[in-house]
Image 1 (cartoon, rainbow, N blue to C red):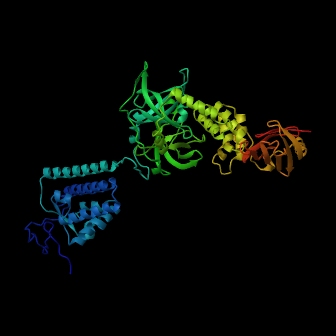
Image 2: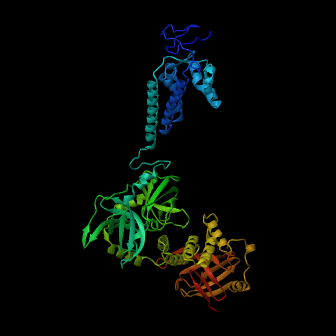
Image 3: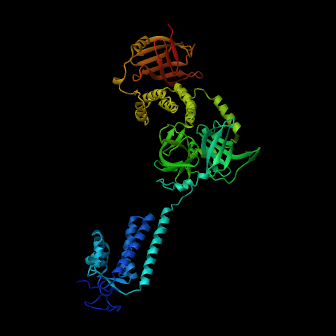
Length: 612
C-alpha cells in the first residue's frame, strides 16, 4: 500500500488531483520553483534554519556539553520541523513541505541533505530547475509549496529577529563557556587550567626587596609577598641573611621598610618579616595591604601549569609560567621542580597554581641548568608563620653571628648551602671559595666540581673551569642529565674528555711508574696530625693504615683504601675511616689523593712525607 500525499498545512491526506485540502480548506499551490516564484523565500528560509542550527550547536559546544547533546538537539529541531510541516525558517516565510509521513521527512532532513551537501552544494541548487526540487526532495519524495503569502516587511523582520536571537544565544553561551568557577582552598584543577589574568591581578601583593649593608649601600635584590594585611610577608632566608636593613616595594608602587624579622629557618631558606615605616623614630605600621591566598602544594601534580611573579635582575612585576616537572625529596626537605624561568632577583617570590593560590616559595636553583628551578612547598612557610621571634635587624644579625661561631668549620651541609645561595645571587668568587672548601670535605661529590666550574666560567676563567668540569665527569653517574652538556662544553673549548677510553689516553710517564714502585710498601709521617702511617699497593689498590699503638697514641685516621683512576693519570679515589675523639667511634669519609710522588703524597685527609 502506497503512502498518500499529505497537506503541507494541516497534514491531512490529499486525494489525487485535488486542488484544495478537504480538512483545512486551504488552496493547494504548485511547488516553489522559478516558474511559480518563491525561490528567494526558500533560500532565505534555508539561511535562517542554518543560522538557528549552527547557533544551537555552538552554544552546546562552547559550554563544554558532550557532543552527543548536539546530536540530540538537531534531532529535536527536525522533529519540530515535522510538526510545523516544514521548519522554523519555512514557517516564517509562508512555506510548507508536503511529505508522505515522518519517515520520509527524517530521510529528507538527514541523508537527503547530506547527499545535497556531498555534491558540493549542487543538490541544493537544483531548486533553480523547472521542477523546483532539490536533491533531498527527490530522495524523500517531498516538495516545498507556498502555503500562504506574507508581506515582505513581516518576512524580513521575522528573519532578522530569529538570526539576532540565535546570535545572542551563541554569545551568552560563549560567555558561559569562558567562565570557570574558582574555589578557595584547597581547590585544584587536575589539568592545571586557568587564566594568567588571574595571576596578573595578584601583582600588588608581590614585593621587590632591596637589601643594604651597614654603610647603607645597596648590594642585592630579591622578591617576596604579603600574606597578612598588617604587613606580614614571606621571602627566602638568604635574601635577608647578609642585610643590615632592607626595603620592600609593593607591586602597586608603595614603599615600606622591613622593620622586624618575625621568624626564620635557615635550613628551609625561609624568613617571615614585618613591613612598616620608620620616620624620625616614629614607626607607622600598615593596615589593609593586599595579600596572597595560601594554597596547598599537595594539590599540585607533575605536569600542572604554574606561574611566578618576581623581580629578576631588579625588573619588578615580571610574570612567567611553566610546568611542575617534578617533586623532589632532597636532604633538606621536599621541593617542587618547575620549568618556569627564574633568574637572580626572583628568589623569595610566590609560585601560583592557575587558580591564583600560592603553592610554593621560589628558591634558588640547585643546578644552573636552563629552566630547572625549584620552589619550597608553601606548607613549610605556613608552619613558620606560627612562630613569633619578633627580632629587630640587629637582633637578627646577632643570632646569625652566634650560630656561625657555634657551627663546626668543617660542616659540609652548611658550607654547601651557603655556597648555593651565594651562587644564586651572582656572588661567584665567594661561592667558588666555599665549593673548593667543600671539595676537601667530600672529594668525590660530583656536584661540587660542577658548580665550581660554573663559577669559574662565569668569571671568565675557562681553563680552570675545564679542570673542574673534567673532575665532575669522573665522579658523576653515567646517567647524570648534565654530562652531555659538559662534554659538549669541553669539546667546544678544545679540551679532551677525561672519560674517554683508555686507548685514547696518554700512558703514565716513567716518573709516575717510579713513584708507584717506591710507594709499594713504605712508612710515612702525616704533617697534619704527626702520626705515622704505612702504605701498601696491591694492583690498582692503595692501602693506608695507622701504625700507632693503641691506646697510648691514637691517630685521627684509622685506615684508608684507594683505587687508582687511570682515566686522569695518577689520582687515587677512595674512603678513609676516621676516629671520633669524643667517644672513640669510627666513621666513614670520602677521600682523594691529589699529589702522588715518591717524596710526597697529598690528599683531602693528609699530607705525607717519607720517614726514611
